[in-house]
Length: 377
Image (cartoon, rainbow, N blue to C red; front, side, top):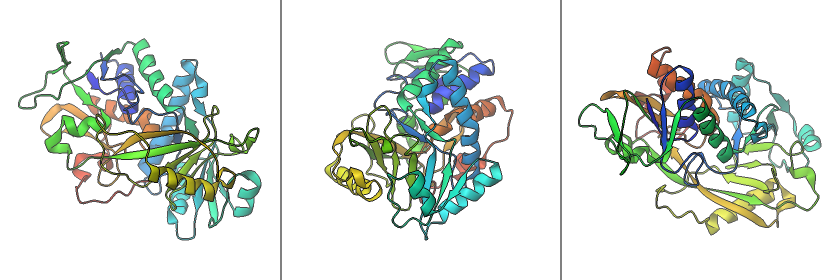
């Protein structure tokens, strides 16, 4: 079997296929965790909450133990930081309440916090406009670039043939039996899984261009006051204010407090797109920092990154067999939330290839319509 793309979906798919006994080759054009990848970057929130999308909450609950086990086996358990994740709720914000109910049904550990509790436990945050919150104490932050690289290396140690090579778009005029690796020849297999993130629409343009939109997204790291530990975990958790359009991560490894913007940016080409952070994006991040972390109102910018989301019209993942080629599978549409779900996605793809589990309609091709509006946060 060949898995194309060594991001979180591809690396974990290769891992699970190998665990199931298959011979697997994992190929990535630039290597796992590279700077163009959606699975690159320094940090990603690992949260269980997904509103009423119980499938993703269940997959998140299944994924975190796998992340922790693999990182521990690799001798790098500190690539996961148990910072906790705090959902900030407004009066006109049912998403937080629905999230809490879904997590309760799944048996996930959460705490409901009132504003007075929040101010005493996490004093660096300003809670203006916040009427309640849901806290996931066991969730946290993965150091993304290094974590996904670790998965690829661990897969290789278990027998996966991991190669850094460019895969040309396949010829789908007939049954696919090999892919071409640039000038390095052909790679033959019986089954192919394409998990190449923002490049999927380039690989399958006729089918996926109407269903996948890649957008430019920005994150910013602001310097915290010298000696002030209110911005480090556990004093500051990862926090999410989807109603206001922002999320934040605590200061980890001295990189600064991270602010991300949830609004979808303009269309973006992962190969040629300009990754220089914008003046407008920085100004918006500064406004959010000033509103939620007042002590950072005039904080210096330490780092900024431009990455990309690859969104389906609904925001749901896209994991399915190619409708015209029974030995070709597609796994993508991470839509900004897929990183944490890598282990469960890999297990699901492996189960579909092996035909050992039923398909999940929510992530299938038939559920995607170009006119839908993104609903998953």
